[in-house]
Amino acid sequence: MVTDFGADTVTFVDPAGQGAAAGLGSVRVGTAPYGIALGKDGTAWVATAEGVAAVDTRTRERTALIPYRTDTGPVTTGEYRGGGMGIALSPDGSRVYVGVNVPGGTGTLEVVDTKRREVTRVVPVGRRPFDVDVSRDGRQVYATNHDSFDVTVVDTGEWTARRIEVAPYGTEGGLGSWLKPHYTAVRPSDGALLLPFEGERLAVVDPGTGRVRIEDMTANTHQHGVAAGGDGTLYVVGTGPIDPSEDDGPSLTVRTPDGDERVVPLEGPHETVTLSADGRTAYVSGGFTRDGYWNGLSVVDIGTGRVTRLPVGERPLAVAVLGGEEGTGGA
Image (cartoon, rainbow, N blue to C red; front, side, top):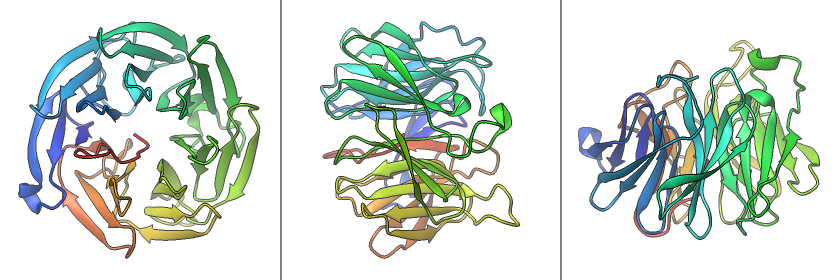
């Protein structure tokens, strides 16, 4: 299931299909859908510019559109549009957490009660919350804020918020900088937050102490989406070069827990990555947030590195794997 950032729909996809046969129909959810979170009950929660949409993935119907409390201005489309971006579910499925972008201002984390289907709390976070993640015990929520170079740690008991600056290249470039955080993966072994930068540096953040440690990476490309497998292997999307004369092209980095990396080349910009339930396949979305996107997924066989391009959707940005246990993604 992919969010069509270039439309107002989500599209159902058969990864084994070919060409037009891969698409299994679409459901209107709201303008410019961004992130997606899949519940164990088969409900998909989608962050759109208009509100959080609930989709019954069995009947393939939108069952609710929950408006935001945050004023995000007129409903628009494109990279800087207001409304929901990153989204995640609490471990027990009782809450949806969505990062809401406010054009020109600081964002919020809105908390949705999944039974009442309404927003119950709003917490200030940073600017343009690209990603939202939850600790394994559900006690903390992490909003990754692209334009303020930070992660906001929200305590779900006290509803307090702490800012951790994550800027391994510094913040001198301000809003015009390319060297900002995009997406975060929570490391299964210890709950550390993993944020890749430029195929050169991996920021390893202790959300308790706020300490940031930097490890080397090797892909040398502008990086966005990230996912962590159950064994701690990290999968990182390279969207392409900032400077084509110095940087490498699009890729998927497969990084083992001990830091060894294998870089799989991709064709064209990509945005997020999600794993199949068995961890053998990575689905990488082609709906890059900037110009240069393409309408499809790159399906990567992790064992062999073989890449199959699957045309589907309209600027697909986030992916959820339906059927059985869901995959782990940085959507």
